[in-house]
Image (cartoon, rainbow, N blue to C red; front, side):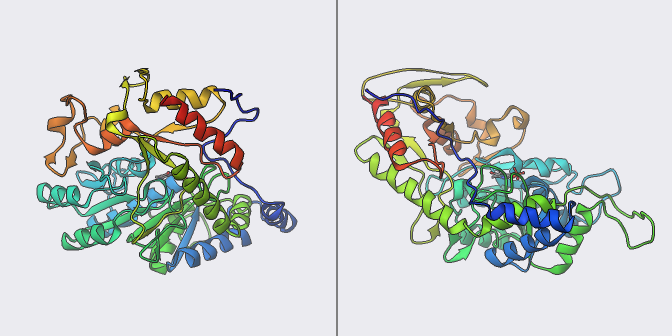
Length: 423
Ligand SMILES: *Cc1c(COP(=O)(O)O)cnc(C)c1O
């Protein structure tokens, strides 16, 4: 193939700033000397976020993970009451959560002493399988909380999941960190959870360099989270504390960047959609498919374009905990070969997020598939396949360069590079 490596690296998803719009809000913070975790930018980010997603209130925080932590605390106190100081609100409690996700979705459960129970993935959306969730409630009927992610900007089957939660009297936390701007049956993701969160991390659909927000349905919850996020100070002339606090508030400088970025979110989504469709067309005829969604129900934000290699077209690939090997074969390929080839040409891809039940840190946590206890089978190697759906998508899937700053010409070259792996 007569292709030279890209002179400038093509990224998976890098920030896209706009001609000083973000800077103007930062300058405003400087001009007014609100160089702190309060100010007009913070207030505006809360207003804009709540309005955009369609929830009562948003609380601007230092990151999406902090927002998840406060969501877990709000849900936990509502379910189980306030714990004694020094104890987590979820101690001794199980929480059902998405398995194929970034670990920030589930870690806050553990911060609060809870035990994540991982629910297998479905092929339809690469999100939590409603059938496996039902199965988990059969096994753990006492569970009161579900944590769900909309992976890569594709909404989960939110009606089904909500219905199951309702049936079992469980609260839902929706991790919309990757899906800001994606909608399900015309309603924005981030509004489906009893408590939901979004992220403004550097690689997300819009960014503040860092930052996140908690999305809630009552002013009472919002005020509680605002208090916790600013060290839980009571109303008194001195520093007075009745409960444990955190330093989780968003900076007014970062809020300036986020505020500027919101003006371009639709443009970002439109660009991401073009990227996804160009890959889809470019790969026609290859033994691969793109990360799926049901276009009747779901309007993704197309944050990351991903692909899976057809089972029959997989060359041999093995992975240890931190290395991967493959044997190339004509007409076949695998994520490792494709990612290494992209890297050779100075383009960044990434394996699909490794499922939580496969992570050493969570090796003892329960994992539920549509058949029940998935732990009984995950260690068994099944010839020509995998023991569960998450493991299978991880084995055959990868995230493609999905950077808004990537040119059409660069993307066409990337498509050729991927094609060459199957020659
Ligand atoms: C990015 C991300 C988070 C965490 O957000 P931060 O702002 O980086 O803390 C949580 N969940 C998912 C699915 C994410 O992709």
